[in-house]
Length: 110
Image (cartoon, rainbow, N blue to C red):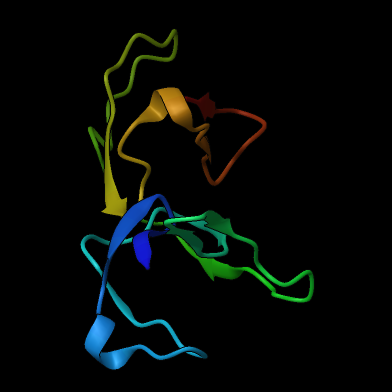
């Protein structure tokens, strides 16, 4: 019996009716976090290993805006708000590197 499925650090709701002995279907409960991911499937007997040949699926992050976008202090100390898609929700478990269009002048590492 399938107890839990996760993909891209998100839970995936198991659909027993659509699954079989050779196929598992589930619905992601939220957008996956960016990165390269393979599914984590947990049964009553423990984690089901992925095939060594299984390639991970690339989930990309997208930056859609950054505020403020002008009059930044050249000495730093500006608070930036970066919005987009598929960012990690918990930064203590992840590292995010953001480089601007001129990385030799400005680099932000969270």
